[in-house]
Amino acid sequence: MEHKDWLQPKERLDDLGINGLKIIQHPDEFCFSLDAVLLSHFVMLRPGDRVVDLGTGTGVMPLLLTTRDVGSVTGIELDCQMSERAARSVALNHLQDKVTILQGDLRQLKGVLVAGAYEVVIANPPYRPVGGGYISPQAGIARACHELTATLQDVVAAARYLVKYRGRFAMVHLPERMAEILSVMGAAGLEPKRLQLVHPHLNKGPNMLLVEGIRGARPGLEVLPPLIVYESDGSYTEDLLQYYPKEIRQMAVKEGRQMLR
Image 1 (tube, rainbow, N blue to C red):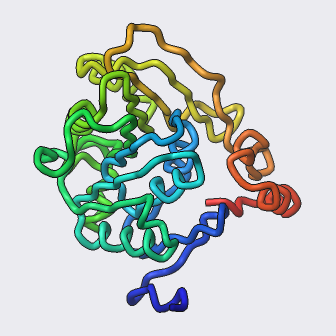
Image 2 (cartoon, rainbow, N blue to C red):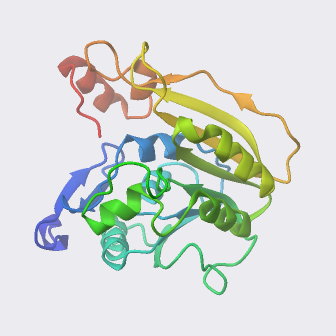
């Protein structure tokens, strides 16, 4: 079957730039961005870990995690069309033995996924509460960006339900909500242990926060050096390019443009 045969009207096929992975996306729906790529590299994994991605969207993080030494990844997504599209991306890449996409509500996991059975849970949740900024008229984009169907508390509660004792929960979010995030995680027994701030430029404040907590751990937070995304000329920094294969890094540096998405 040719790649075009996997696509439905208006859909496009994007190259993830690693291991030949492709992903199906719809330009009028939510498409993945750099935050998903950063989280898929930030989370600590051990060989054979079973991972759940809460609100998987396009399925980009499960796909990227297959390039690491992971046991299996289950993505759960509320939107029927989005989950079906993510499942087609998994099949297109012949990763059905590693990745499973489920259509479902992360607020209602009982009977869907086994409690306390997973070493790792990850999430790239809606960043803004309802009432916090412009809400897109596109329903799928609105749900992905605003807490219309799942709040921060809902996401953390779902992670706490799924992750085993001493298991890890990693999330990408907004720095402006750092105090709330650390408080909610700690109250749920997912003690924050690693944190990294992401800055678009060296002289700019952070616009993303990466955090990882461990269920049942003692207090003690390691703050990693900040990650700077762009050089002054708009190209990616060397730290960011380390996430990509050598040939992709060399091409990006040579062309000096934002070729990685």
